[in-house]
Image (cartoon, rainbow, N blue to C red; front, side, top):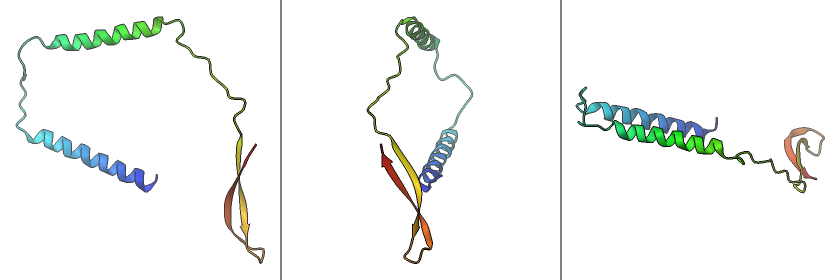
Length: 99
């Protein structure tokens, strides 16, 4: 992992923990907050997902053929030894060729 990814992971973990602590700091009680029939919204969302899935499955051209580019250049890279004037290997470098 790069240092950037490690930093972003640590920041996300800190943000998650901070949000969890702030959410639990309020006087949370185990009681319903809303009275009434609000289950209809959930049923509507589930129904919309089901209808969308059925419409997507019924499409006859849902599969697209893969497109291959014949004219795309091929790039090949190799590691080559770096040699000083005395013939000693002082490292490696990447050399790329385009065909």
